[in-house]
Amino acid sequence: MIDWSAIDTVLLDMDGTLLDLHFDNHFWQEHVPLRYAERHGLAHTEARSRLLDVYHAKAGTLDWYCVDFWTRELQLDIAHLKEEVAHLIDVHPDVCRFLEALRRHGKGVALVTNAHQKSLSLKMARTGLQVHFDLLITSHEVGLPKEDAAFWPALRGLLPYDPARTLLIDDSLPVLRAARQGGIDHLIAACRPDTRQPEKDVGEFPALRHFTEIMPE
Image (cartoon, rainbow, N blue to C red; front, side, top):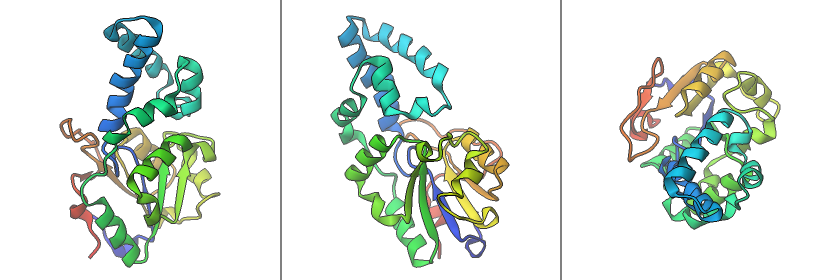
């Protein structure tokens, strides 16, 4: 799947790629509606229906990923609510082995995530993955979501990289397509971001099922 001699820099998504997306799916689809229902005196199903409509309107924007935006919008302490279910944060199998192998082979390694800094800090505190990266970059620092093709050239202001010798692994097809438009040559899709859900169709991209499939030798 990868000719590692052609790769200098590896860009890795966090949620759904390195971490099990079950935490985020449970948080936004179950836990936030539960707390929203309690606050507003609604049935859980009604709260969930209302919130899914609100979420949909913000999908793919920086606001969707912003803890502070949702705290204001929903009048809920989103950072605190994430702490309530932080025990669900989990690393996909063999991620640490893969990151250690990248280091041994001299690759530049950066975490590039749409997650808000507060979410990133919580997840790094729970997993300890930050020790494996040269940089941790959020889309909020760049000022654009990763779904925007302009994100990828703008990222080079924070992380100089050669797009022709860079690999991006992400679970989002809109992100991967934007990265391709932005010039990144090597793209792989994580096809089972949530371990409690079936594999998803990753379209035109090579599908990553397990990090042992691409372990540098």
